[in-house]
Structure formats: structure tokens, C-alpha cells
Image (cartoon, one colour):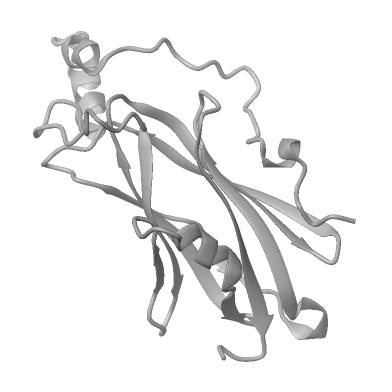
Length: 199
């Protein structure tokens, strides 16, 4: 039996009745209902209209995941710099070690360019001995980065590692960042080991 998730398992869950809004350019958003104070505050919360754009006209990607990290209280963060060539292959070949029962959380640094990124989600399927567990975390909607806000960071909900003889062992995972338009911005395989200690 393969530990690889079926492609459907990595599909984000959808909220019943939710429909993705009409696409607009950044200029259309900036000029939208300029006299509406609540809309003005909403646009400011997205960073629309402040700073100079950092979008690279030669890079068509809408979202660039810059790094992934693992935060554990009292320990240095483990950061995977995704700008380095081969970093995703290394992530797959060299598992994280997590102490059983430890509280930890993942985080991602990313950059948005060209247009609004709507409803980005992180979807993950973890497999061990044929048993699969899916989780999803809403990251949110973001405007393209500017000189005022050159990148974003999202810290995920805290998790607790399994513990005991049954919980210890090797886990395989497949993760992806996907938006409301079903565009996958990054998909990768990785693994981790739950051990009695950090070594």
C-alpha cells in the first residue's frame, strides 16, 4: 500500500455557498469606491495603495514561498530557505526530528506579486504505516508586496507531537499551498521522525 496521498486528498475543503469574487486589477481595487470609508479601511488592511510594488515583471508567479520553518519553544527555529536550489529535495531526504509530546508550530514566509492572492490555504497529508491524516490551515488573502510590506509571514496553529511507543517513528508528508482559484503555488514531499529526544 502506497503512502503517497491520492491527488484528491490534497484538495482543500470548500465552504458551502462560498463563491470566489470577480477578479480585478490592482488599479481597479485602488479606485474602487474611493469615498467609502469602510472599503478604504479594508483596502488599507490588504496593503493596497501604500508603497511601491516589488512585483518582478519577469517572474509570472503570483505567490513565492520564501521559507518554511518549525518553531519549538526553547529551541532554535529550523528554517528551510526555499530560494536555495535543491532545498525541497533536501527537505524530502533529511527528515526533521521532533521530540515526542513537544509543542511546535510551522511558519511560512512568502511574497505576493502582480495581483491579489485570494484565500490561500496550506493543505497537508501525513502518512504513517498506511494511516493518513489530513489537515488544512487558512492563510488568507494578501495584496502584492510593496516597499512598505516586502514580505508576509504566517504562523500556523500550534500542534503537539504524538508520544509513546505507538507515536514514535517515521512519518511521510505531502503539503501544498493553494488559493481560491485552485492554483497550486508550491507542493512538496517531506518527512519527520518522532523520537524520545531531539537527537
